[in-house]
Length: 574
Ligand code: GLC
Ligand code: CA
Image (cartoon, rainbow, N blue to C red; front, side):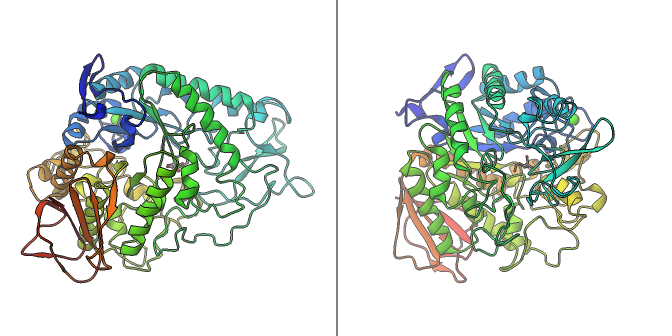
């Protein structure tokens, strides 16, 4: 038995024994993203919370994941759903208390689940005392140097210091007002105006974040997901920037997602700066002060994979999200290319590749794959969007895509609700929307609320089991009744049953630690590879293909006869 397969009872519970180099848990883990506000509500206010997560952890163990990543639950005015932190070392009352966090962590560890928390180091909330102190301090003061305060351009400083745009729309600068009521300096915010960017040229900022990492490591967390990891360092002098193609597609594919976040064309002064890597080297050392395997996973919208892999060199972060994979359209050549390119790039630096199809910022993948080719679908989808996804086709492709993903070597990320096959919720009323993108673009971009709707646990009962009070911070659609966990648990062909089978077989056959070998001879439309004793075939073409001989381990759709239908994937064993 390899070390990773050994399960030892530790004081913390049933966790795989710590690995030696090469066998760390995060190299092969399937990590489930919990979006706390939409997972489970314990106190009836319509917003999910930490005690709600604790109660439902057994369902995640039963699903078969290795770890959970929690989106932010720290003190925050919730202007960007918690990605605007006002105190990094406390829990927002909306989600509970630090004691609730400790109980959740202990319960997770007892179930053998690792826990990663979200760290938001690019910006704070404008409510953070550091920013409030900066506002109250004089121009040029030490307190102001923790952020990016600059004088405006123009005769009276009435123009922003440069032409940068906020990812959420509008200018990336907001002008302050002096105590005397006169207009003051401007501050930089790559996101909402309530999210001022920290100045990572300040050693003081570095010191604060070492302390924040240690605060959570001392409590026993297994790692951190690093928000906007590619944005923390800005080009010297904050030069103007005019991207060639605003709102364009990163990959040249028909699907565009978060185009501004991923819009790091060469020369972009706000994304993927070389100087950022020194921060991750520093944090790598902080994690190394602690026993066991801890991991940093960077949210870096950087492509191609060869550039992304620089974030996970051996002395930097352990993982980084593979958004190039997420953005790959349903096309056999594109899929083969991104898999091959990712494995080559990450292997080249000794890091595992990661794989991801959905998260809280993008259109859920059953909806994405159901949008016909050529749909300009970036920035969310809503009632007035002039096209609708083909739901059945989208779900079928999503199931096939996940069947491919969970056979790949490396670590995979799942987003809560995808195991139920949940689609993006398109018909949210305008009055319910909360994403700052919606407000900052005057309703022009729908934003991300559609993937954040509270998830269904039960077919009947108040808010489909999300909250006993029946409240839900975003309204749930009636189709949740047919996609609830209790319904799908009982159906062998449900998406939930498929995910459980995929995860069990992946673990059983150690696919996460395996090696991929491409197979030829199945035609251009079939993505075909081997990992360990499993042969994976996915038909992305428009016609069925003959099924080879062999024992079917699982398939994304029921197979009738000896054909592999379109938009279907299958695992064979020898
Ligand atoms: C990241 C988060 C996103 C958030 C943004 C600003 O992209 O995933 O949800 O809005 O950073 O913090
Ligand atoms: Ca609650």
